Image 1 (tube, rainbow, N blue to C red):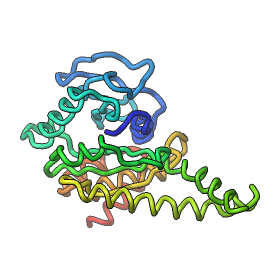
Image 2: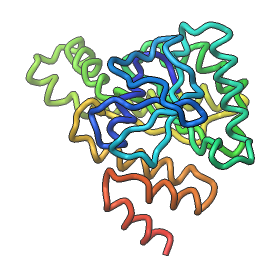
Image 3: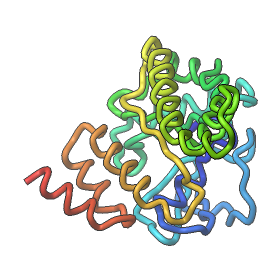
Image 4: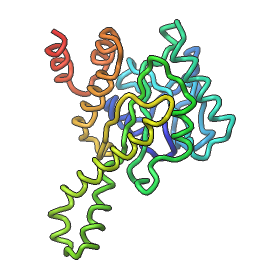
Length: 244
């Protein structure tokens, strides 16, 4: 979930280790359409539809439209779906975790009314919400600008940009967490993600799977997630050592 152009589809592709676009099914398993081009702009699809990648059909995703320009009706549909599927006793209809994307290229205003509204009105019950600070590598440009403003030449700025970027990210995460933890239904945890648009981003996917696993309430769900992912076999080994 999250605003448009927050990198939602890219994350799903990386988790399923593919560059292909997903197939889409309705809640009854009927194919709706095969995505040829994709946009997460408002009104583009129904959150109740199921997104499945052929590279890993064990994962079933539901993708929200971008919040910031969505209508009242779209937001209410999303809220109804989340609250219904987080509490349903039907296991095949239940959602198990929510990834909420906040892009760091919007660092001037990372939290908008849309995010505040979601975390103040959407009760996800025992379903954890993990906030993903996507496009964290965009802060490198901000770091360079700050260093250049301080008088460093480009060579000197590039040499120091990595440290400044990490500091900016820590400050940004603390700011976002501070704001969202004042909401009624605060997220469970936060994870920065960088360069997810690159095919070789398995380390980021590993962090995402492990953070999500830690956020889940039951060992059974943790095992299900770990066994379903195919990004990195070492995750299965780490989890086995952690549990046993």
